[in-house]
Length: 496
Ligand code: GLC
Image (cartoon, rainbow, N blue to C red; front, side, top):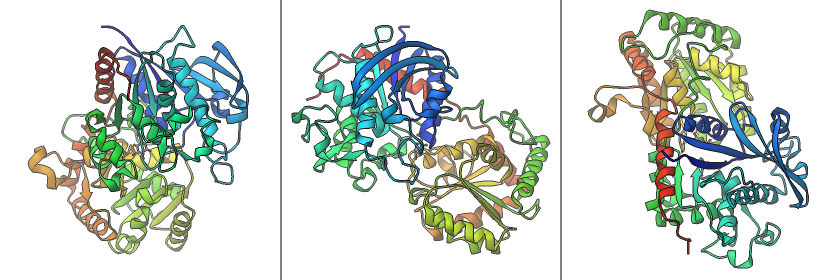
């Protein structure tokens, strides 16, 4: 079979640089695609953490006077990933996170920074590195999206293109005055170009020019066609719906492996037969006890222990959980929260935890080890998102015998099976779902799940079903591979 070469263009890639699930996906997918005969190289910005982890450099291309400074394109291999790195210290060698200053505001030159990334991607696509000329340029999220506009306006024979949306809420919108600075021609500022409500829309441009668009679940692919879910891009996405598909994410099952997880005291096997072996129960009990101890919760083996891991933002619906703290207390449940984000939510959660430390523990920040212990030790993981393109924590939960309680949106809808869906799915309940995402509905599902938790046999069946769900990258990687293959066989037509 002909090997397909793909340039993946990203702002985040695990384990080098991560602020969210995007990095997990862009870090795991190239490795899974190798097994499908797809050769992926990833272009990422030379943030400090990326530069510090690079192994021996295999090649260098100097880029003098590049977006206001001296830059270099490097290629190297790191943690099984074949990388191109845009080493442009004037754009990327900064403290803070990839998008925000240490004070939490957008870097004022974000348009230039991500235009530079995208320009480099387009140049690689057009053959500037002769040893790797990709058949496909695959842009992830707005940070990479402008690559597809540069390729279009190059007016040269170009590789095929794919645009993947991980979250439509982040669109990369900048003033029109930036057009010359980012090196796009005046005619590109049009509805059939990069113009978006009178400004420059990076994601809009990517969605407009991509040969194919994907997002990270089939349900989210439908949701974003509506005016509400489309967040300003619904009209364009409806026009492009024939080229849009949803491919679910997987998780890296070597990192999320309850049999070998170094962060948990009680390891157990996930891929066991349908019966739920006593080892799993015992080891999960040890993990629950360790978690309660570590976080100072009351050591209560029979309390229904809920966990939440994720960004504290409106999207994630954590305010709905705050409104249910009384229900949680009155039903004898406990709750552990790990995440950071919105300062108001952080404050409210922390205050509530101080008032009730035996039942509620809140850890602000990012702690990979604690995230693993939570997955291995809580009884149920709550994901009450208002929208969720895919969601990854519920997939880890399934693998760890933790029962997901999720809202009926996006990838949550596609990856969790509720008892209510039995007619369709044939008795394979793996979790609990509620919708629409309101505090009242969340309260209802928590009570329903708590009642089932106390029915030991029923709960074990749900855990066992979840643990036999395939959450690996195998199937998703095959879908991406098929998409790429179909795409390179197609004759490429210029977009009007
Ligand atoms: C974003 C989305 C999340 C998705 C992840 C990876 O973080 O919010 O739902 O799982 O990207 O695709």
